[in-house]
Every structure is written in C-alpha cells, then in structure tokens.
Length: 193
Image (tube, rainbow, N blue to C red):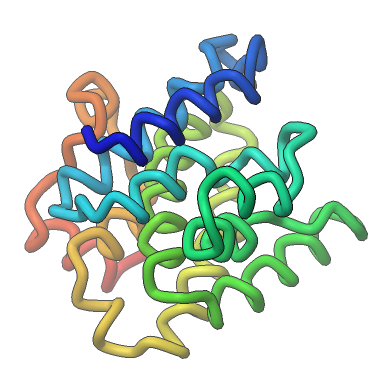
C-alpha cells in the first residue's frame, strides 16, 4: 500500500469513526475496504483511485469538506470525491436522478469507484433487506445506463460493469467476500437483467 493510500485509509477511518453500516452494524470502514478490494480484484491499483475510494463517502457522510480533502490530498483526489458525493436536497427519487446525471458525466476514475461501490452496496442490500432490494436495483441500473449512454462500449465491456449490473447476488457470492462469477455468466445476466 502506498503512503497516499494508507493516508487516505487512516483519514477515512478517523472521519467515519464509530459510524456503523445500516442493517448489520458493521464498522462503516468495512464498506470502504470492500470497495477498494473490488477495485483491486479488477486490476485497478492506481494510488489516486484507491485513495479516492477510501474517501468517497467522507464529504457526504461526515463533517469533512471538499476543502479539507483538497488540503490533505490535493485536487486530483478531491475532484473524484466531489463527483462521488450525493446532494442531500430533494426526495430520494430526485436525489437519485441528480446523482445519475452527475455520475454519467464524471471522470472515468470516479465511474470505476462508483461501479465498485454499487457492487458492494448491492451485496449488502440484497443480503440484509430483500424488501428494499428491488427499488435499490432499479436506482442502480438507472445510474449505470446513464453512465453507459455517455461512455458506450468503453464502460459496457468492463467486467466491473457487468458485475455491478448483476442483481441476483447469491449467498455464495457474499460468503466469498465479493468474488464474482465469470464475465461470461455476468454477460448473460446483463442481457436478461
């Protein structure tokens, strides 16, 4: 782990402090670790991207400001965090639509982080809240299709995109801590999903 990534990991752990994940009460940092692990599993190892992945929820879910991210990590990382930060104005439907609009125009690296975030959040919601899962999956797919409209084949051919598009996460997938099925299987599900 580079010094930059370690600094971001430490910073996010301090900022998220005692926050817990919805449903299972796990430390919030477990979500951040899972997002970074998904990126690495897909060969995404650039320190700026991994650092931003650790920081992606700090402005949205803690008292951290974009200015603080700029001061501590520079504008390249702050820009990615900014693009990944949801606006809290409006009802959920409006917020998710605004998020999809923003993410469809986000830098490539922010889209990669968001895809890993979607993979991890889908697993978490499907495992813990079967009632909320269908609505979450529709919101997720709206975001992904808007990203695909902007990026086309570049994003749609990524195994990470296919993994994020899945909506049939199984207990086996969860137990394997994020390991996806083959891209061919994901492709078949993408066409039917």
